[in-house]
Image (cartoon, rainbow over all chains, first blue to last red; front, side, top):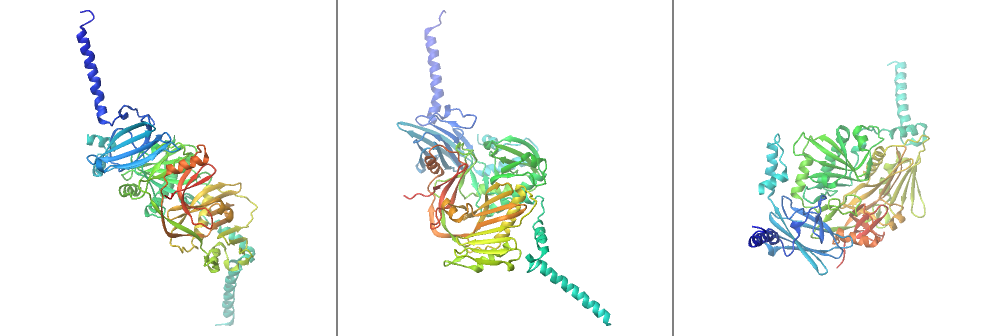
Length: 174
Length: 460
């Protein structure tokens, strides 16, 4: 039929719109009010560009798995910006630790975060004038005995393909 | 016994006695009055044998442990800690082995993030160490030329080849040398510190991309303010305002070959001169001791950095033995500056007291004529001048919270210099503004040619 069924065309557009809506809904559900983390690209230099702030070290992606006990989260922001770090463990939001700092003339910020075994959430709130954005990250801190076990595996399989510690950990926890 | 045999024995005894007495005359109490003295004195100063010794004498200003965490988490070892001593011993050995037995792999552009990606140990010197001209050069040494830091990434398996990274921050190059790891001491030390870390956590300015820093500097990060005990500096020879001349004698004597022959002269301002042979030692009432050797030589022999450093360090270590530490506060000296002159090298050392460097103001420098705690000039394979403060640090019954973060200090520095000046180094130090005040803890910021002290404590 020439031009096709207008009803079918309308249906196709509707399905496409629904698919687009649900694909972005998951991202929005995982974030706070406005979280651009999932859509940012990490530059080759390792900088996490979050528009209002740039994280140069300490966090590389939205969800990480690690054995680390500390993270130094550092970055760049405009002078005068108030940056608040809220750190809590899953199910223990009431015991959250809150650190606030105002970016000075150097345009730099840096915060030491202590990670505890389990799922750690870090919310970074950047505020300047009327603009405020929050970015949520999750770092799963694993028991260090797993790391030792992994290292033992490497010794046993020393003549086989070497197991990279970080990749093995990602595989183990998935 | 017949008469002639008795005469022979007597003659033999007389010959022995005359030999002993001549020896006494030449090398004993009247040493500097005889012809052979200068020859003998000259020979003794050339006794040092040069092999790998000058390299093993090098001492780092800092030893840093990379805990291998994402984003960079470091531990700077306290100078007085057992871990520092252990690391120094092991790294000194690795340094010598890498230079003399190592396999040179390649030269690369310096990428701090790349070389800091694993657990490692960094042996950092204040300035560059030029390796050339000390006579034992091989291809590894000539390829490296000079370096100011050595990074070692140990392996957990024995007899594996490990990489040593000789870093030259001036040229932004890294030279990779492989050696066989015959012990696991460094690996175990890093693991121990990583698992039981109780000290302060540090950032690396290169890893967090602080572009204002010319060099890679380690800065402390904390959520609770660290506390430090304050100190007082005192002239170790003064007791109740009076000079203890007996103690002064004990400090001066090791500087002479024949101390019992030294002549002493005191002038009205309190300065005391001691002279013996070609050596003059002056004691100034502000607590400065100055040794000058006036031996002149017609032939000028310029020595390499490493040889000169070894001569200076041996001299300093020998004189250190004369200091009896009254304060029970362990004090260390570290090489803080070096200068090449037309005739040789000048070395400057500073104190580390209570695990923190001790620095003083320009005002004190002008009053004492000293920019650093110790100055040693080496020319013609000899120490030409040695000048030092004979002050001692005492702990006070007062603690302060270091509540100014490195970022706050940098912000203040940027405000002072008005435009963004490049920072070469930054650290906490006991800083004394004037002789009538006790030292306080400051952030010390070094630019290319200036030092900016910024108070590390802020009252509410």
